[in-house]
Amino acid sequence: MKIKYDKETDVLYIQLSSLAVAESDQEKQGIIIDFASNNQIVGIEILNASANVDQVNGVLYEMTNG
Picture 1 (cartoon, rainbow, N blue to C red):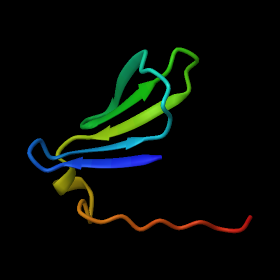
Picture 2 (picture 1 turned 90 degrees about the vertical axis):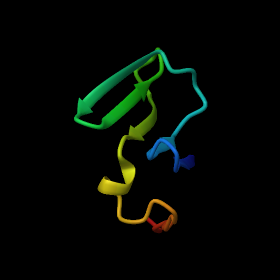
Picture 3 (picture 1 turned 120 degrees about the horizontal axis):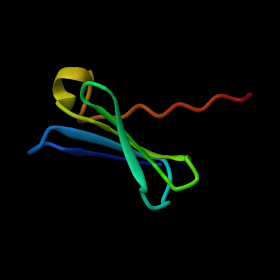
């Protein structure tokens, strides 16, 4: 998984897979989900990220044992 924030465009992208994007859907205003040809989610794009995400410049990564 890779997380990228572009300060110039104020876009946060969470890449979940390295598969090629075959289709993109805007599920809700400002949230775009990219899908591979097999319908697997490739990534999630958040537009106007600074208004929608608490900490665009930092990431807290947490893993649970379960």
